Length: 364
Image (tube, rainbow, N blue to C red; front, side, top):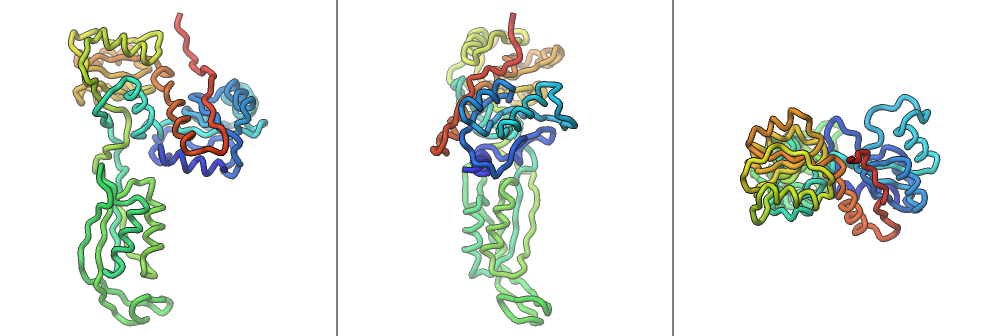
């Protein structure tokens, strides 16, 4: 199996098309055509992690955070980023990053926190915009079923919990082939009117190339008339953060104790207690202070995130309990998620969970 095949597997979990614009996801070091001997999964790629990959005969590191975040102008080993890249290249080890693609995934970082905390009724906290598109094409009515089914098989027509969704309108299409045309129906230079079906389907934007390929392959016309529009519809299963619930409400202090134990954190920084029970919980792994207002608007009793600054705690404004559990701590279970996913898909070589603690923060 080559790295590009592993990439296609990971795309099923978290398409890179949904990474944030500021991010640097995908293959950062190496070639997509490299044969994989083993995969090491880590939260961060450090020099010790590269050494661990070497020891485990893994020539691909799948990392949550990207080791290369901004441009590198030199590789002299002057800092940890350059040293990691140099060591990886010297040992023919590729590095692949998921980061915000997995943040935005329905089964990603925040889903793991929900699972660990035993939360139910989860929903996306901040749905990602402009991720749903609509394709409209025009097909001879006798070929409409074939084209429609091909679009469905390629992933079109999925809306929330429904699949094979389309809208179809019958009408007349007209065309006249020029001198260099090869019309399937009618003759060159002949004005032709044909019974056609207008087919409209929605699809997620990452599937656009496969959707168009399916349309062109199944459509009988030499020149296919179609249009694609981006919709404003809310994507129910894609975006930053989650809002979910405890089955049974508990007090704030009980919840903080439970959170501390479950998320294995040595310190929870939180806003003042509000003397109310906790049931509805907003979550955003990593640096999530930008979502405080979204958590309040969602009616959350508590918002769990990391990297909150001094004034962020004022922004809680007695509307919710803000709990900063630490960046590493909020994303630590991401490694387990990726190992479990890849292990189910791959049986030809080892998928190894990194044992290196990459948390740069310690508590005194």
